[in-house]
View (cartoon, rainbow over the protein chains, first blue to last red):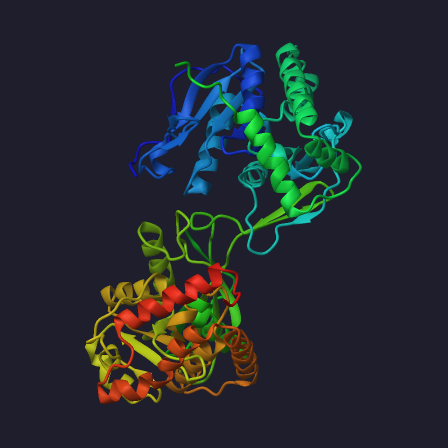
Length: 281
Length: 303
């Protein structure tokens, strides 16, 4: 650890009163990253700072994902319309308190952030054809009132079970509250068989929320295409493997699957969506 | 990283007894049972933020009401002779998925605990942990004692059911105490404070089990109560110890005969150690652990 600040700012975001949206790379269904990417892509965002990785991640090689070496990063972006600050990050491995306080410091001091949202996925045993709910956990009564007009599920009661840990998003939200910043953790249930794949319907639910709340003027065409493509592939799979369709239909009417059936459904979906074209000879 | 005090007790010639979780939570359960039995009062805690990730979130009606952290708390009990300070750490400030603390945070935590010890003039510190030993679970657990100064060796030799490292077969006085239960001894030595770690014996084949081993905690309590010259209610820990032995015996009956035969040889270890015949070799230990590991990986079924 050095004495230098744990963050670097290399652009001037030029914001006085803004909103921060944060997501984590390790999120199930890639939901957080895909949501932030979609919002950023549509609003011409640019990068302006980062949390330096060396204090928070094990500098012991790199992970390889989808054939590519991936180095942890924690970067800040400002949207083209100057309304949003986006924070995309890998989950730190240590010193979470210092890490999250650095995020909040950059948000408050450099961007005048007054509200924070985190985005993430939660496990669902419903089918992918069911409408995606948006669940909100806020850190203040004021934020709860703020979220009320947006059709969110806002009455969750929960205590972390023994042996489990609270999410990093909850921790960020709590620390934000200590600094007087309103925050909401937004969660979209993702069907268990899409947890390691993509869930464009869940992405759309989150993007739709931000578009409505902050009047971002986002074009949903690309997302709608992804949803249609996924639906087509699954329909094709149903024709080829009727048993898979029967599993999904049972989930639609609230019937559970046993472990073996659930594993078969997840594995078959993974096979279909991860299948790559064979290299040409 | 600060210590927060809710009161400033006036203590006479105090002794500190500290523990963090470890194998079978043997030390932690022993120290916490002692604390409860003397009804010690909380007076300070170490701020958790820079040491720990939270361990609990409480959400009510969609609102995050609180986030809680593992506690690192100090308690005191006035006895009229040597007053007592207890330190109970719910977690070791470990990183990267490790169980035991090491590095800067561990050192910082040890120093904060010692700051409290010195503030109140503690002349002696006890820590407690587990000693993984080639014993059988039906045998009485011994207590291995490691002081941070050779000046304490003669005193420790006088305690019943206590072994020094040189008394343990094959150790030749050497060993290692992992994590803060050990580190505190070293840091205390740097500050010129006497310290002893008392480690209750846990059978070698139970070291990886995710449940406590109260028989060893009981052995530690007996030794500590004697060293501190206090009387303590042993009913609760004795009851837990009996219950745990019963559960282990039930599990033991389900082991394949070959593994049971191996483990039964551990019943002869104490006798053989004094005779120097070495019934259980290092190779035997490895085989026992491998067999046990395989048995539980198969889901415990017999073949």
